[in-house]
Amino acid sequence: MSNNTKAPLLLGIESSCDDTSAAVVRGCELLSNVIASQAVHSAYGGVVPEIASRAHLQNIVPVVSEAIRQAGVSLQEIDAIAFTAGPGLLGSLLVGTSFVKGLHLALDVPLISVNHLRAHVLAHFISEPEEEHRSPEFPFLCLLVSGGNSQIIKVDNPYQMEVVGQTIDDAAGEAFDKCAKVMGLGYPGGPVVNRLGNEGNPNRFVLAKPNVAGLNYSFSGLKTSFLYLLRDELALNPNFIEENKQDLCASLQKTVVDILMGKLLKATKEYKIKRVAVAGGVSANTALRQAFADYAQRYGWDIFIPKFSYTTDNAAMVAVAGYFSFLQSDFVSPDIVPFVRTTLER
Ligand code: KG4
Image 1 (cartoon, rainbow, N blue to C red):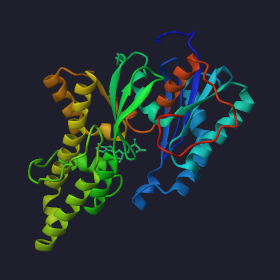
Image 2 (image 1 turned 120 degrees about the horizontal axis):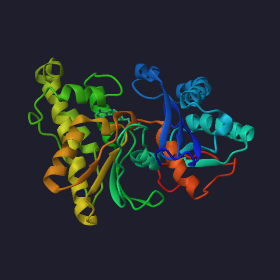
Image 3 (image 1 turned 60 degrees about the horizontal axis):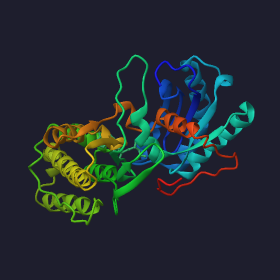
Image 4 (image 1 turned 180 degrees about the vertical axis):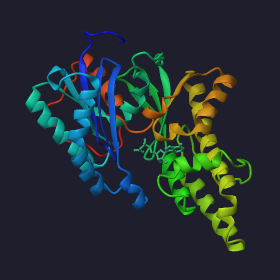
């Protein structure tokens, strides 16, 4: 879509969890992407829904104004508004949806409802001016890994996606966060485990790997084996965590990555698809990124890894997902209500 001034101008709005974000795109080309993150939750060891909703209320007007300003456009030029309708935290989603309904009334432009999970997958289509960009051709497989999801998605086109494997209990990010919490590493723990793990020996501790049928994942057994390891070792040495945290993080990281990559490899063989992408917060993990590069070499995969800025929640991916719906005139009426349940279907 680069340089195509005829492509529609879309405003995207994301408020599904603890990031308030607004972006402007022309087609798939990104003109601005503004994110206000809520650091306040780290003091509570996780996202507090009520605090998140209140912070969205405070942030949404300045964030949207800044996105419009940075894009160098006016609100009146916007052709449609795309917003995350779910899945997510209900209070957070309600702030975004109520805001866009008001804007819709004021501007009289179509509304586009975006599924947050699909938006993560379609983040691979965000193109930035002056930057070389390569989007995956269809079909491709996408490993979507975040704090709430671990799924393998077969993407036939922007509109047709199928979950072919998913976690039956915890998500990969949750495993990182919970294990980090018991080590006293704060929240969110994933980035800390990543940093410390890169300095440790990944083969020092052997942790449980699940035996789950098909392409599904499970991370609860790993979490329990990690807890038992700490319990047993702490009984012998109260300084065990402090003295071994690099090796603990490295071993945890290696086990999560091995589990994720094992099922993904199985999926590539089952569906005979070698174009493989990764998305979601955990895709920032450098060991996972390295594993993608290694598998590309070993198995001839064509890999797609998002920029760090598009791994976490952002409105750029929502706006681009909205653009694909715009092409199909897939608009919603302003009486739409947000949804909470994890599904790709809406
Ligand atoms: O997609 P995301 O920003 O939010 C939702 O889940 O809604 O993902 C957040 C998750 C958290 O579990 C966080 O610990 C994890 O992504 N994460 C990481 C890294 N950066 C973020 N996990 C491992 N390594 C990282 N570098």
